[in-house]
Length: 312
Picture 1 (tube, rainbow, N blue to C red):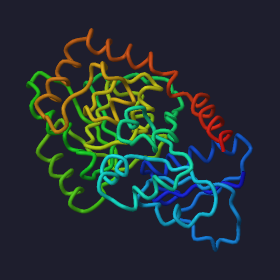
Picture 2: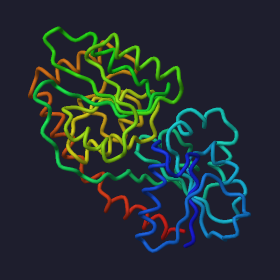
Picture 3: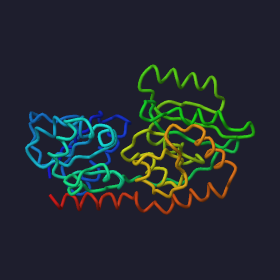
Picture 4: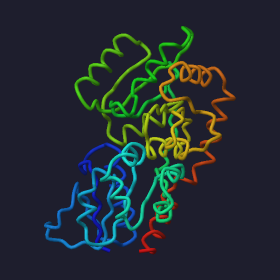
């Protein structure tokens, strides 16, 4: 099929929607489809498309409403957990969609019966890379998150302040500051907190290398649809400490031992300290993560898309 993927983020962006659009395009091309990626569809591009795949119910609503053929709507995070309850355009996109894709099974709980019937869960895959030797001079943990409110990006830094003096934990934070306020906040935290270092935006390859050498990944987001960082951590066997939001629980499992309440600095600090000082706990998280690896393979994600497209 001649397929257009519409993402609200530019093609070369490192934000989640762009990464997802790029990966989906690669999967569909390997399945033999002709795929283009754009930020919108107006019907005047000079090319006719058989299928529209639109990421984000609210931000891609105009393209969904105009497109004359079948539409697959990808619910990617804030649209699912913040827009749908109150935004008319997001709800309209849901009703117009031929099929809906969500990134983890907890998302189904947010949909009514009619939407759930046409929804398919397709976990995001990640390519496994070999674990690298961790730093010997510290217990390095990483944060892979752009600096914006929904990510609660400095929560790990704040938690590291509460660790005992004997702790060797160091927080390496990779991600772009989305405005000057966040850049100054990160710089200020660096000056005040010797355990924290913000290194700005990295290429995907460099971020993967940072993850592979880290003892832990921390994901403190307030809202997630299904974080790429979690998929990548699982793929390379890195334990995760993450906020207990539905998007993270759906990616892992309700009984995963590494959850903490959103915004609870003290609870996160306690988990960091336990991970550093209790090898059994760290190994328990690692074993749990490794058992989940088949969920995030490219083969499984490709099969999900192949089955979904066959339904159309």
